[in-house]
Image (cartoon, rainbow, N blue to C red; front, side, top):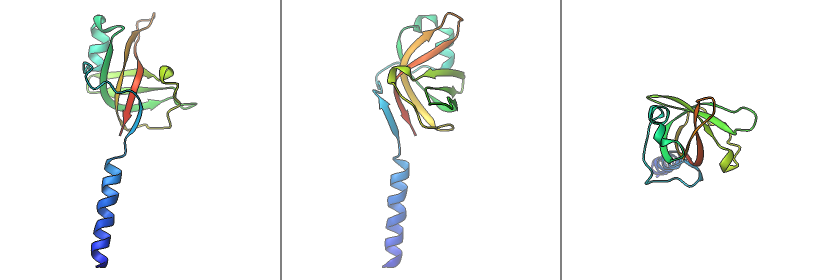
Amino acid sequence: MKGNKLILLYILMAIFLLGCTDKYGQIGENLPKITVRDAVLKSDLAGKEVRLEGKIITQCLSNGCWFILQDNTGKMMVDLKFLNLGLPQRTGKKVVVTGIVTRLEDGQVTISARGLSIS
């Protein structure tokens, strides 16, 4: 009986840990999925809402107002200003971002996040 309770406890812990996902804003499930490379090279994406997936590799240390997303094609900054969000440290976590592709005057391309899902 004691062994069964221990197994049940392990199963419940695994379910809890696997299901831990932080969500902020609205995740646009039907938005076009692009890569960092697409955002940089395809100028027609500027101003459009898209979906990217990757990993958080660097994050604002003062109040979590931005992070750098990396996928298998490159890296780009994700601005969290629109979400009015101070994101706790999530470096190394997988992330799905939906947001607007923004081309800055200096040529840099960023994503203005409208939604985040972090696991």
